[in-house]
Structure formats: C-alpha cells, structure tokens
Image (cartoon, rainbow, N blue to C red; front, side, top):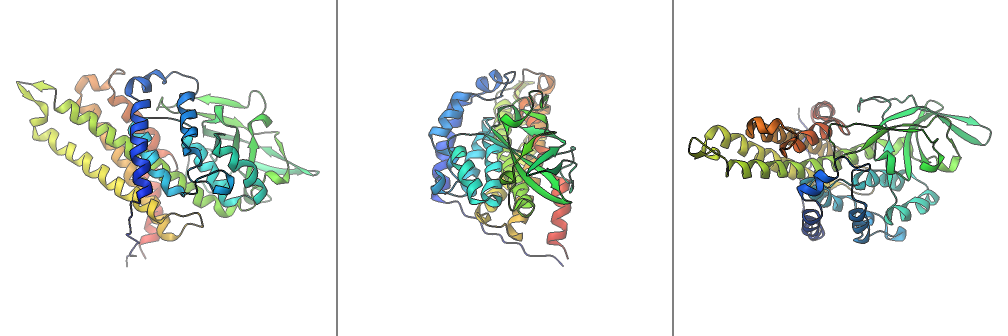
Amino acid sequence: MTRTANLSIEFSDEQAMILASAKDFCRDKSDINAVRALLKSDTGFNSDVWNEMIALGWTGLYLPEQHGGSEMGIGATIPLVESMGRHLLSTPFISSTIAAQAIMRGGSEEQQAKWLPALAKGAIGTMALLDNEDWGATDTSCLLSTEGNNFTLQGKKLLVNDAAVADFFVVLTKYQDSIALVVVEATQLANNAISNRTLVDETKRAANVDFTGVTIESAAILAKGAEILPDVRLIGALLIAAEATGCAAAALDTVVDYLTTRKQFGRLIGSYQSLKHPTVEILIQMDSARTLIYHAATLIGDGKLSEDTEIACRMAKAQAAEALSFAGDRAVQFHGGMGFTYDCDAMLYIRRAQWSQHQYGDPQHHRKLLASLLLD
C-alpha cells in the first residue's frame, strides 16, 4: 500500500520578486569569465559580491525581524539559491544559511541573540558534520568530554564547507552517548587545525578541521541539537537541490547554444534526433526538479518539519542531483573531444554535478529513506 503525499505547490509574490532580482544580480556579477577567474583563488568567491549580497539583505532573508532579518522563511531562499546555481555564483551563503537554521531551531534565546544578528550582518557559519564520507552515518567519533566547568572536544571533521572563511562552526559531536551540536568559534581553533582539501568542483571550497583540544562552555551547546539535526540535514539537502536545479538549467543553455551553432556535414548538429531527444530529456528532468524544490519550499516552515516536508525535501534532492548529473554528462558528450578539455565550460557543470551528488546524501540515500515513508 502506498502513501499519498502532500502535492501542494505555491510560488508566492515574494519568491517571484526575489527570483527576478536574483537573476539580474547573479547574471551581472557572475558571468563565465568571473567564474573562471575565481577557480584558483583562495576563498573561491568575490568578497565584494558577498558584501553586496549582505547589503541587499539576503543574508537575513530568512531570519527573524528581532534579530535583524526579514522573516520571510527558509522557503524564500530557494529562488535565490537557484539563481546562484544557474550562474555558478559560489559564496558562503548556503553554508551560513544551514548553520543559521541549526541555531534558529535548536539554540537558546541567548545563543540566537548572539549569532543571528551577526549572521544577518554577514558573519559566516558552517556545519561540521562528517567524520567520514558517508552522509548516511548515524553516529560520530567526535567526542565532548567534561573537565571541571568546561567541555573539551576530541576529533576531526571532514570536508567542512567554507571552513577557511568561517567565523564559527556548528559541530556534530557525542556527549555521554547522546548526539549534540556545539558552536565553536574560529578563533578557538589551533593554528594548524584547518587543512584545505582539493575538490572536484573547483568553484567550491572545503577543508578538514581538527577540533581536538578545543574547550567550550556549556553555553555553546545547542539545547535541542539532537532533536533538530534531522531537520537541518533536510534543509541542507533542499538548498543543494535548489542550487543543482539552477546549474542544470545553465548546462541546458550551454547544450542548446552549441547545438544551434555547431555545424557538421553541412547541417546544424541540433537537427539530428540523436541529440534532440537527450536535450529534451534534460529539460524534462530539470523542470521536474524545479517543481519539487518549490513544492518543498511551499511546505517548509520554521517549526519542526512534517513528514510531508521530509518527503518533499528528499524527492527534490534525489531528482535535482540526477538532473544535473545527466545534464553535465550530455554537455560534455555533445561537445565531442573539446568537451573533455579544461577550456570547455561543460566541464564546470559535470564537476558541479559530481560535487552536488553527494552533498547531504546522494539519490540512493534519499530514495532508500523515501521507501519507508511512502510504502507500507
């Protein structure tokens, strides 16, 4: 017996306004030359563009008004992140948004008052979740022990996004056999604690972080860390899905542009059915992903996520990751031998696809969990 999921979807006036504004901004600030210019940079993003995003109020879009935000909800960030994906505009926005959600949902009033206004003003936060490269892991080897009135961390975290520029980390740890989330400020780390990693997607940055020996106070432990962790993971999956959906649209644009300009044997190669059909398949998969991310954005709220919202987020991540993987693969293949070179823009999309695939769980991970939700 199958379960009937909530199928509602709404595209609000606010989302439409944000999408229109974000499209123009991302197109102007992140053309392909700007993207390539940042590939070898230390941070992977333009600090001037980040400051402009802060000035536009995007870093506080989803935060409560009392903490300097616009209180439009996490769903309002979806059109913004989609536009960032479409133009490969990499900033710490996604990392900070997920960390902010952890503090909003699991932090005390004092913790929220300390960190949320700072995030609205552009402070950078990130989640430190992985002890290994398995997003399906349910345990952690990072331990929190008691020493007098303080607590000490032991352990490393892998592939922490935007670690080198983060002002603070929300770290997944274990305390007395229970899962906990703790906030660690970047200034508390040892000088050699951050080890940058080389990623397949050169527009992104991540590092391994050693938290061993970091001492924190009890005020740094999120009160509802274990309770809100599943919701934070789902929000992360949804934001990555929105970015991947936008990137799939960009890959489609690249494909169509090439098919309508490249000639072979006296004909545009776009006239051949063997290339038309996969191109239409990219469009169908991308549109399906777009429907699912806005369905999830319709359902998601600031409270505990419902089962319908969990289903929506998992479906969105699975579909978006596969849509981008297919689009990136076809973009490379359709460009022929040139598509395998570093100078071809198609390589940017297939690399982003490989990175996005595993962030916050790959399609197999989410479909495995969807089976128990949808099937009796």
